[in-house]
Length: 207
Image (cartoon, rainbow, N blue to C red; front, side):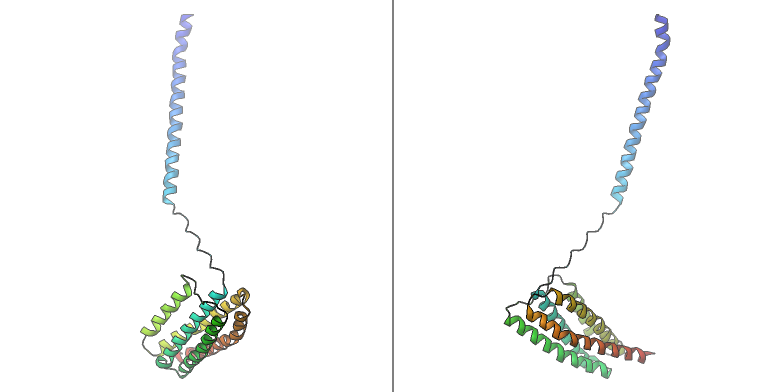
């Protein structure tokens, strides 16, 4: 009986040792896999946060943005009168000063009458973009390139304003603000059509 136990002992010990070794191997592999996963996670950049949604338009912000556009177009138009070299560019500048000044006066009178404080939303992207364009118009020397830069901006700017007027017309709550948008839209469209006409002329002149 004792001999049988002695003979079976090495076999049992070997099996136990194998189980221990096997168990250790599995643990090491799990740890290695975890380390690899952690390394991959650390190396993978976090997704960029979604940009904040634009604030809903209000009567105050509509008047604020339109007033800023009128100031920008009037200021650029005054520059076109002095720095423009093409006759059509200079004439267009005079129109911008006259029309946008009149539109601004109407907007400010409406705001006073209805006790609305025009407010440009904080961090408005258009405000920074207009400032950059204004800086370029001031620093560029007069000539054909200046004329083209100005008119290209007038085309893009008036297209943007028309899109804004469509959104503003739907968002406006004040009846006078809605009426002002309806009245001003054809003028902005007329400016866009004229700017495109001049843009075509300037392009043809360079060929």
